[in-house]
Image (cartoon, rainbow, N blue to C red; front, side, top):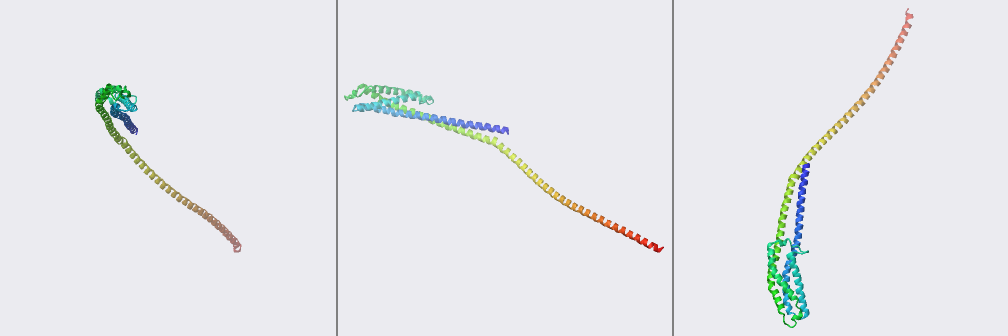
Length: 298
């Protein structure tokens, strides 16, 4: 029994470890999935921001008022600032974005190296554009440097967009691979858990059931023996009570016979005494008669 208990505790411990490992794996993957989703969203947003930067840059020379120019310029600088921060976070990571695992991909590293010239060209061109104000285009003539910078943004936007699209899809591929890996690991853990349950049923519960059946059989036999013993005791008790009743009845009859015998003896003794008295009386009367008759005969 101690051996079965030890085996049961051992199997239970292994099963518990399997379940805990499964939960740790799932929770870790869920956490990674949240980070991966954020990375994919930021990567996808980079494509939109690059288009927004190009649109704002192209719109600047077409503005008619200072307010309109300032809005377009603000749109350009704000988009460029977020675009630059996001690019640095995707490439090197940040406090809010952990890309250390994702960026282990050699293919992804190659894509970032290829996109870097496009990023630097657009970033430098935006810095140059942001130096101009509405006064520079107020006369209707766009400065050559500004026009050149806008052209640089426009020319590099397509290459950046294509490579950023590849980066986004590679992020998505790696995230999907993690999910598939988790699914495969879950199948292995499930198979291991089922195998442990089967082994536990075969090596633990099966012997326990056999032992339980043997104990039930022994208890049943002992119960039958006890019932038979009780029946025998009851029968013996009844026979004893019957014998006691018979003995009491016999004692009563013996007592009655003894009383009758004593009474009979008394009556016989009394009759004998009466008979003896009558004999004595007759003898006396005979002697008297003899005495009376004797003188007369002489």
